[in-house]
Image (cartoon, rainbow, N blue to C red):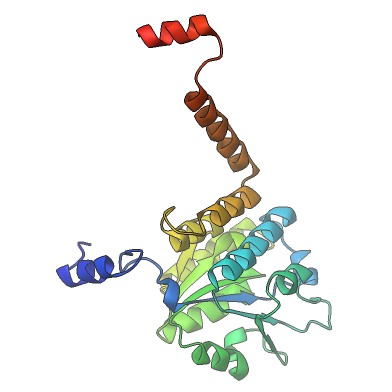
Length: 240
């Protein structure tokens, strides 16, 4: 879709021009639903280490960019277990909404009220299990007029088959699927922001090989600036 002239004017007036189809950092809230120690043991479509890494990266991203966060848990005193500690450790100021038996977080009036009080219309959600804890509130929120993004790699399920089915259901309901790295890049938007190094560290946290890429680039840059140490090699390069 071609942006209108009005949309381009808005983009040019912003500090970091952003197309209207992209996530507006000033309008987003992160909802972390039922990332509980018991439920995570049921996850089979992702490695638990990968899932926890993605959840932690979301928390670190929210902290870095001051994105408001609402967390909730389903019967944390029962077999589902408490929220994994990384959420509280990284987001001590996140709003926590206890539920009173509701499977669907959107059925909890306090949860919906906190979302409404945020005055944000773009909801980024992740939850375990993805076919229930994520899908139910995501579909309801989309139906209520919110722009909803579902983080599929920060939401685990007991089978890939089940996750594929619920992904189709959510898309049909208007929910936008994405993953943690895509979200981070969309929020970052440009390397010309003061938090660029912090974003690089987040990429390294999620992709250890990214640090190797950074290190090799840094060493190549240093070598290019200092030039070859061998005088004969320097002479050859000079004559090229």
